[in-house]
Amino acid sequence: MLFAQGLVDIEVAVPGIRVELKYSTTDNFFGRDVYGDLVRCFLQPEVAEMVKKAQEDLKKQYPNLTLLIYDGVRPLSVQQILWDSLDKPDSIKPLYVSDPKIGGLHNYGVAVDLTIFDLKKGEPLDMGTPYDYFGYPAYPDRELEMLAEGKITRAQVANREILRKVMTGAGFTGIGSEWWHFNAFSRKEAGEKFQLIK
Ligand SMILES: C[C@@H](N)C(=O)N[C@H](C)C(=O)O
Ligand SMILES: [Zn+2]
Image 1 (cartoon, protein in one colour):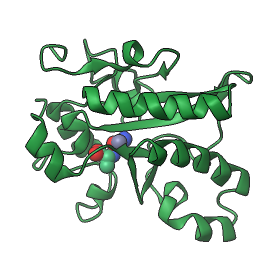
Image 2 (cartoon, rainbow, N blue to C red):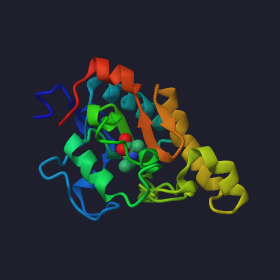
Image 3 (cartoon, helix red, strand yellow):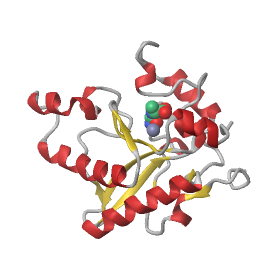
């Protein structure tokens, strides 16, 4: 169905990349598999090309590292489940989960959640918080403050910087509240170019 809408499977587009689709497991912040048949990561073709560039850049500098994708396209119906499951006041919810009434960039297949996996150690790099940790220690915008308070370490920030460097170098933009989330397009561009995935 996603193929029919023109999206591509990231593991086909980017050989060697790793995928652990968290919402297709119970290992996520609400403890349910909400993806059903969606067990592979799909993205818009232009976005997959950008991820490919980030992966190539990473491999060139660090042959023992690889990108590990946690989420790509996310149907709007699942966005609603995430929104309803997030236990935060409505005023700050959009910092962590895009409002399904508007639609977020994952719902167009142009946002990606990811980390870096160390092939030698057989585990992801330590980024200071787990994926979908919704609080200041995960904020790129508050790293200096979190460092000063001893909530995260310099080594963890250095790991995040490797991720940010390859992703921004490939044309992605990060957000202030989640070290793992990157957008390939603005909301305006996404709305003009792509259909919302229901
Ligand atoms: C829920 C989290 N993984 C995420 O992707 N958040 C952004 C802001 C979103 O829902 O668009
Ligand atoms: Zn995201």
